[in-house]
Image 1: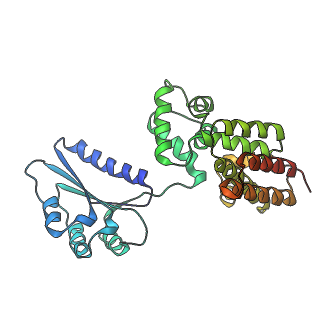
Image 2: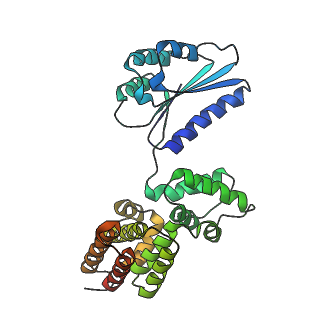
Image 3: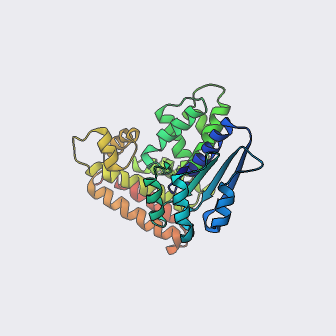
Length: 314
């Protein structure tokens, strides 16, 4: 019996697929049944876990375990203590407190468990590197981080991008250049380019990137979000205790270690007063583009100008 717990659906689905694949390796004659725990009753459960006339091995995938009917809990716990040899039951719980009593009893029965928890934002480049290695490719830390910036934080999208890049790289390392060719037009990348230029105090490049983003149909809220995230990271970096190790500092700031170098460069020229002014300007622009103002483009230009002028201000 296998217990899969956690809210990250991509990792949970992968754990289920891996379990089915492992059974398939042992036997070519398998039967897979996928059911919602809420629909289960004692008769159906007995049928699904009993001997099959059609397959030598069976896999029962029981999803949304938190919705298991209360009268089924004792039967499931009893089965966990003595499961059938020719049936692998995969129990999927999507996280949270609901159904926790059943989880605790299953764990006491020594059921194998896979935890499907999403990695932290600063761990995503490591996830990307692992995915690319899984497909037989190689990537350095900077390129892995560039893919996260390009695609975003959705694991399913990242995994798909890794598979595509390795397939099309022709056996070569996955580079930032290759990532740019595939994903350089993504909205997230354009938004981050605006934020990076503005935080660096480069007014003209920031305005050019902003106009390009708006011409390409980038949602204004993505620009304010990228700017807010960049300034928050910079504020945390600037206020962190001195003398910290890179690993500890990265955790304190909430960024991957590779980004500390960028934050160190960005922090030059910024003062607490300038940061406060910039953060207020971004908050105002965010409210404006969400309906407080009728001209989102003007609100964003005003935000960029205020942020760039706040760079170096005392």
